[in-house]
Image (cartoon, rainbow, N blue to C red; front, side):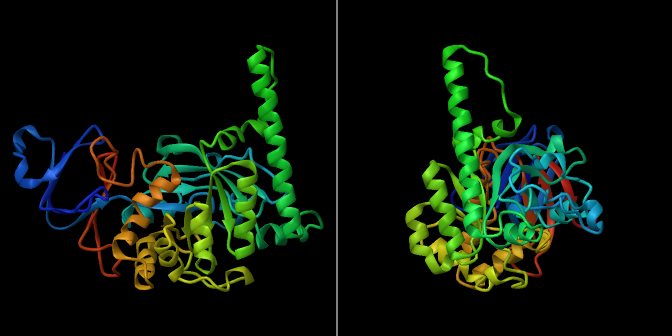
Length: 389
C-alpha cells in the first residue's frame, strides 16, 4: 500500500510536505517526498490519496487500564487490583485484558495505535504491564512487549486499601519497607539461581520470583505510581539502592522538583490532568507539569490513565499541556516517540521510519486541537478505522 499526499510528521526528523509512505507486509518500506517516486496503480494493491491532512505515527498511551478496568460492567469487568495481598509481582496484565472493552474502539477512532496496559495501584507491587496494539480480538496477537514493566505504588492507594483491612501497609514507611524486602528477596533468589547455573547444579525455579529477573537485569523498568514529592523521592531512593530502571508515572508534583528530577535521569509519564483533584496527594496536579519537566530536560510522556480520563482524550490532554507551556513539537513527541521510548518499544513504533511497524494516524489537522478529525487509523499496514465508515 502507498499513502501519498498530505504532510508527513515522521517524528524522526523534519516534516515532509507532499510525501509518500510505501508499506509492505505491515512495515514501512519507503518514506520520502511524493515527487521522488513513481507509483503504478496497476501493480500496487492500494493507493491512499491524502489531499490535505497530517500523517503521523500512531498515538501511544504510555499508562492505562483499558480492558482490565472495563467500561459499563462494574465489578464484573474490574480486574485491575488484586486487593487482598500487597505484593503480587507474578500477576500478568495479559491474563485480564478484555480486548472487547469499548475503550479499544475509542482508542482506534482517536488515532491511538498502541497502549501500555497493566494493574492498578492498590498494591505495593501490582504485577506486570504489557504493551499492546489497540485493534484485534485475541490479546496474544496484540502484544508488542510483555512483560514491559513491573508496577509498584507509593502513597495513598496502598495505604487506604490495606489500612482498611487492618493490615500492613498503613504507612508510607511500610510501603517502602515491603518493597525493599521483596527486592532483597528477589536479588537473593537471582544470586542463588546464577550460582547454581555456573556450577551446573539443579535449581528449582520459584514462580513468584522469576518475574523479577527482567527487572533486576534492567530489561524492563519499575513503573512507579507516584504523585507527591516525598513519594517521588522515595521511589528514586529505592530504585538507586537496587540499581534499577524506573519510570515516574503521574508525577503530579514533579514541576515542584524539576531540577532535582532532571539530575536523577528517570523519565516521567504525566497525568491524568484531565480529572478532578479527588485526593490530597493530587492537590497540586496541573497541565503545566509536563512542560516544566520537559523544559528541565526530562523525557516526558502524557497519560490519560484510562478510565480516570477517557482514552480518546489523550491527544487533547497533550494539547492542554501545550497550552500550559509544553512546546508544540514536544507535545507531539510526548504522545508518540517519547512514549514509545519510555515504554521500551521504540524499535517498532513511535516514529515513521523504514523498517518500523506501519502504525499510522491520519488527521484533518493537529490532533491536539479539539475540532480535528481522525481520517484513518492504520495498524500493521491495515486500515482499522476510516472516517465515515
